[in-house]
Image (cartoon, rainbow, N blue to C red; front, top):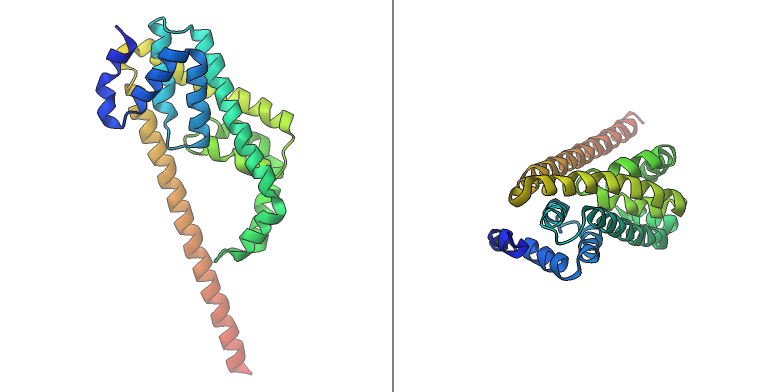
Length: 225
């Protein structure tokens, strides 16, 4: 089955599958790597479509399985390093200045976050590469905190290789049913986003309540005086 024919049904879903198909058929492994590099920079581009499709292309003989894994992992690292560079360029001083202007947050919150990243940053980068959405975003704080670049690249390579291998092999084994992978990973992505939104709402509610309690205590003290 020709690769383009196999993904034709995906075109009405936004054309991402068709776009990725064109890259892989035209450029082979480097095309897949380029698509994944862009996916890292622009998380709305779904790796759950690009990677299984690349695996299916390997099963069809468009490229070798080794090439698929090498180039997609290289693309992941390139995209992650670009985001790391953005974080490093932004820097801690600008981050603190921006943080100070945000409502409902305190400088101590950012300090605690930095301390947490100093203790657990390696695990966060490694495991974060295997979590939808956060697999891209984790590169920015790594850059802000100036994690040693060699360590960052090594962790990103290992984490990306694991994630890419799972999705590429799924597409390879599923054949023309490669798009099933996107359904399950898409559900996981929505669950991760939902948890992040809930956590943000809880954080804001706690901050508002804490501010109100502090205001009431100050008001009571003034009344006692």
